[in-house]
Image (cartoon, rainbow, N blue to C red; front, side, top):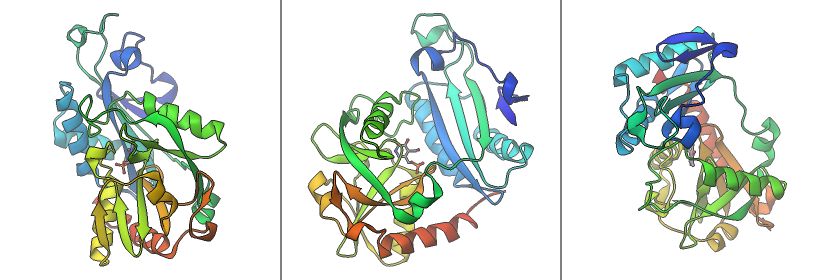
Amino acid sequence: QWIFMNGEFVRKEEAKISVYDHGFLYGDGVFEGIRAYDGNVYKLDEHLVRLYESAKSIMLEMPYEFDEMREIIAETVRKNDLRDAYVRLVVSRGVGNLGLDPASCGTAQVIVIAEKLALFPRELYETGLEIVSVATRRNRPDVLSPKVKSLNYLNNILVKIEANLANVSEALMMNNEGYVAEGSGDNIFLVKDKVLYTPPGYVGALEGITRKAIIEIAEEEGYTIKEEPFTRHDVYVADEVFLTGTAAEVIAVVKVDGRVINDGKPGVETEYITERFREKVKTDGMQ
Ligand code: PLP
């Protein structure tokens, strides 16, 4: 396996970073998770726009132009002989001293890893997920915008720990007002009376690229979509619930805090949208 590191491809075993890297010391950096389907990198430009905007927001200077970065991603997939892959792009502030001042750091480090990934076991896509809501709150948008996909994923990790403790694969976090924000690494959708609901970005959800793709598909298919805040109650009484994300793709949720959704089976609208999504990813990408 070949890893792209700051301008060259190195073997996985040799891909090492300094302990003085501020991504390691402070979580100072940004990242993206991207997928390739059958040799096409899906929605690459949208992922890179989010990355460059996240970098700009935290005043991190990207050492590569947008077009160079596109080529690096595509080349990493090709170099590893992958057709279907999960690509992790990490940009850290770089190597500095022990102080947190980013001014001590040299150039940002750019690392690209491409490999096969299955986030949830295959059978969970058939049966649907059981999830719980947890105490961890999404960080406030006025502190650090949820649009910034930064390397600070501690809230998300705490969500995952709470999910593990509850013996489920994923969990839901609220914002400080109690509105449902998102999962640890995925966005949430509800279906109620044929209308699709998903929390707006300002509630505290990352504006997921899969979320956007699902909204586009649903619009094409004539669904009404409402981006509005909702509470756990609305989740409990939804006809269908599903999660979306680059790693998760689209996955049905069949139980939330012990409340059974849709008789405990993935719903018909969820299955239809999932199917349309799977068709779309094959044609919508960069070689
Ligand atoms: N929410 C969080 C916190 C995430 O980390 C991710 C994954 O990137 C998502 C949602 C889903 O976003 P996307 O569909 O762009 O992968």
